Length: 154
Image 1 (tube, rainbow, N blue to C red):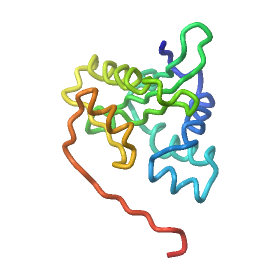
Image 2 (image 1 turned 180 degrees about the vertical axis):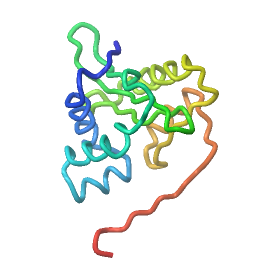
Image 3 (image 1 turned 60 degrees about the horizontal axis):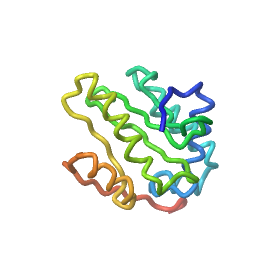
Image 4 (image 1 turned 135 degrees about the vertical axis):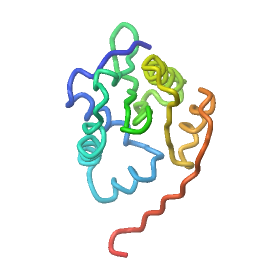
């Protein structure tokens, strides 16, 4: 696996849209009941990712050696309070191949190189592959939160 910054916002939005296929993230699944995957990706980018003041050149696309086919991406950032793994996604065609560990390690290394005293990340309890990747990387659960969503019109 190799890493490079996203070529542009359009490439990142396309990757974000792709990882929504089969997502285990409850908020994203809820979004997909009301909007397209592209609209969800655009909204998350505008409302969250684009607002981080940390360097956007920290953001990395993971690719296969040789042909450079993207397998996923990681958005290491600083949210104004903590260094965070803001977003990590593995493209559906490449899930189950262990790329999640390498992508998470790359994001973690980048933030550690910035002398971050701690790095935080979050995932839904239902996203057991992501939770397991955090555990394998040595992340410790320090908080649990239950978020509920209701269907539209209730």
